Image 1 (cartoon, rainbow, N blue to C red):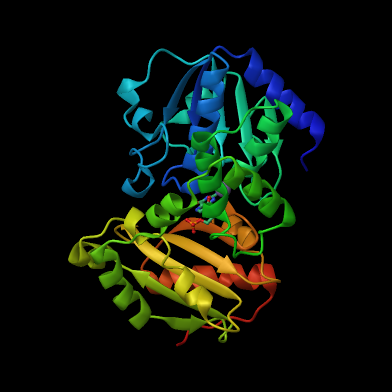
Image 2: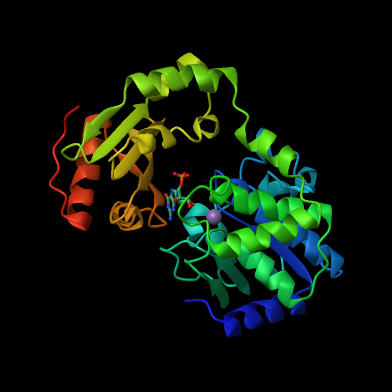
Length: 329
Ligand code: 5GP
Ligand code: MN
């Protein structure tokens, strides 16, 4: 896994670069956006030319982040070919969007904490034991002896709070709390972050009613799932991005080892969010289905109607964990 020499190599590559393009994954979350804007902030201090690109733009709830207004949302607005590309919180070109594989020939720096990431870059700083990419950036900034200020601290706080579920998930280590204490001491706007990340729209809460009504069990009661079809999204007027967090409800059920939420993103194509309790490794389940992620939180996209998708999911869970599966509710 990550060692200090990887951190030093990444630090050196970033220091040598003049023009940088910062990228993360599509459907960006608090960790990817907080990390992108934190790194932008520090690289600007170092006198670099920096562009941040996010496919589809910054979702409303993250617009409060310092620097969010500078994020480029359409490829046409990017300036000339960047000298160095930095990929954060993501380990696959396909998840970056922007047909980003075309950057693969450029010097690429990859900083990520997904268990399924192998390293996209010439230099890579990967640590799947880290709760968030923001934590890896904190280590990098500590190595550079960067001063923390409220804007930088707020970006990093958003990254870490986002990926630890506000310090509740099992990835909330002592390091998470130690780093967070430093961010709060430096003026991270904790209440502002909480208000923005936890705020939900009317349509989200109305759709949640249906998500709860549809809760069903699978894998002999060891799993629980729910779903929304494209027609449901139309009926409630919610976007896929606005459906964020629904997987947490099947996850709440006591005794459930695997929780799944499926959302129809195109006709007969479902984006699947997976959560687990030990010992089920959902990053392995997702990887079998062409996705990836972490042991306790992962995702993938699969084809078929809801029954077909659930059968594929059960088969993959069965293969990974030897939990005998059958559909039912
Ligand atoms: P979520 O369910 O919140 O969308 O994603 C849970 C975790 O799995 C996140 O860390 C996310 O980056 C990762 N993940 C979700 N979907 C995919 C996917 O299709 N491929 C890969 N490699 N990771 C994914
Ligand atoms: Mn992350």
